[in-house]
Image 1 (tube, rainbow, N blue to C red):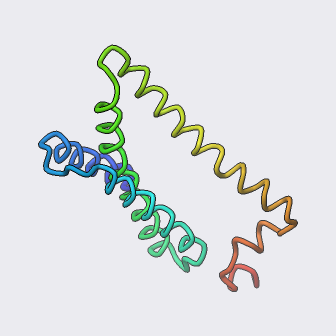
Image 2 (image 1 turned 120 degrees about the vertical axis):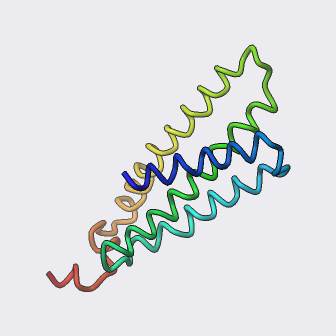
Length: 130
């Protein structure tokens, strides 16, 4: 719930910035999002408590909030108004498909290279000993 609140606040903030043309290079925001998400997720594996997990997940969600407004603005710049609904629909669909396909591909790769999923993700020795 707190994560979603953080996302929505960041989306609103980024859209205000985009609408006022205070940021001219939208690609920077997209790079920040993907960077935050990709850098923060591995730290979730070694989180030793709920506070660590909360912080890592919060950083991941900040990245999502930063990505939404620039992505929307880039689409709006490159498509005409007559097809903007289709363009945004395709963008959201591809984003959701990637969110589903990513974990499935990861699971398939882990099964293929014969690594036990539990021991791979439980780098915290306390969890392995219990």
